Length: 268
View 1 (spheres, rainbow, N blue to C red):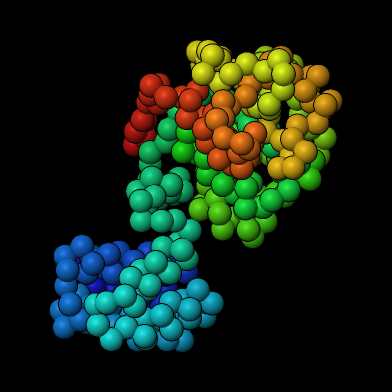
View 2 (cartoon, one colour):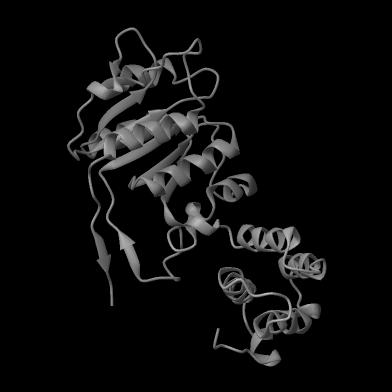
């Protein structure tokens, strides 16, 4: 780590940039297996001393976690984990689930949009936004009783994807479906019915499709099923006939997009 920020410089940073500076140095220490007597660790200590009066709840929290470190042990891992959470991303996602401002890379999207029909759990909505980002879905429509993307629990579980994935709240799901039909989308309800097509038998060739996922307990409304062009179900072999809705979405998106590649564009 060649960077060595002076106190005035570090204090001029935004909250996020401060956390990223700490994380970058902390990860360098971790990857290079440096101990608390190393120059890098002493630099990290110095940064935290600079930040003792920094007015930010997140920075105050991470300062408290750092003060508990007595050696490179479990507590150091807790400190790193908290930094990752405060940044809204896990280590595995650090170079992937990033905002447009962090890199100049963007991914093309599949012609897939997801309609969340009264998914009441903010946890599930956040997870489904994250799934959509990971599998290249173009957009997510939040409808009915679904919490919007600025809900604290949605933000927590989406791991920053609520900022990356195009999403829109439309109160009436029928209005959303009609709008997408007018735009040339084929409407696919993901639901277990007697006439549903098994997912493995459903062919997707990058045409425009809208996938509807329904309420955790009651499933997709009968009105939306009637508006659908096709109903697709995930084949299950246990006693239960349904998956958690966010897990179901991940399975469906994986099945539809497997073997297909998105093109990575570089913008200069």
